[in-house]
Structures are given as C-alpha cells and as structure tokens.
Amino acid sequence: SCGHLVDAFTIGVSIADIVTDVLVLLEFKRLEYTNFFMASSAVFAVSQVSYAFLFTATFAAHHAPRMRCVVFLAALPFGQLVPLFTWLEALHIPSIEQAMRRLGLRPTGDSNTAGLC
Image 1 (cartoon, rainbow, N blue to C red):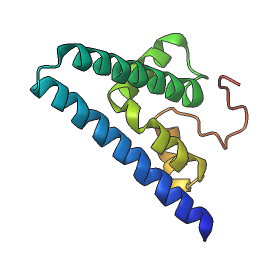
Image 2 (image 1 turned 180 degrees about the vertical axis):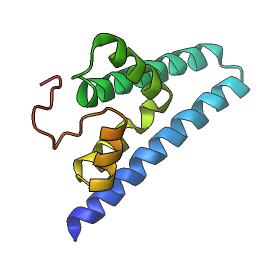
Image 3 (image 1 turned 180 degrees about the horizontal axis):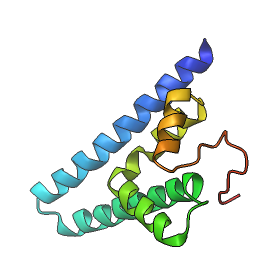
Image 4 (image 1 turned 90 degrees about the vertical axis):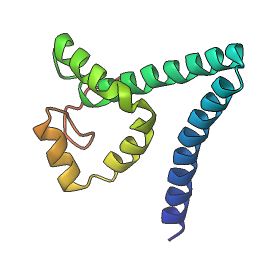
C-alpha cells in the first residue's frame, strides 16, 4: 500500500541522514576545517542528547530518577536511531513490546503510559 511506501521512504531518508551527517563530519576533520568540524560535532551531540531524552521520557518515565538516568545513558550512543525505533515501536509488534517490558521499558500501547505530553 501507499502507506508502506511512505514508511519505507521515510526510513531510507532517516538512515541516509545519519550516514551523511557522519560522512560530512569525517570530511571536515580530514580537510582540517576545524570550525566546521566543531560546529557540526556540537549539533550532532545535541541531537544525540535530545533523542536519548525523548527515548527516556517516552519509554522510561515511570521509573525513579536514577533508573531514568541509566536508561538515558544506555540510549545515548544510539540517539540517532531513536526516531526509527519510535516508528517501529508504534507498530505495536508483540515481540518488540515484550522485549521492552523485559528491559523495564513501557511501550506506548500500554495503559498509564507516562511521557512528556
């Protein structure tokens, strides 16, 4: 269906965005464009932190602050993949929801889901 094509396109663009961001960073470093490298690294770092925060607020808001910090730090290296995971989680695939629950995360389909909104 058309919806699946849009999803596939969106996923492809998201992955390409991550890859090109990293490639541009590496190119700036290789060419010794220090200011561009530093600015791009800062933007990348802010987005990593933002996505890790989104993940934590969406799926671990029910935990005590210490555990939310653990989840945040665990999500931080994978921050750029959070939008893809969020899309996948929204499909409410039973095996993914079970794995999330085993990890102490709360899928959005569960009742009493706490988040930012």
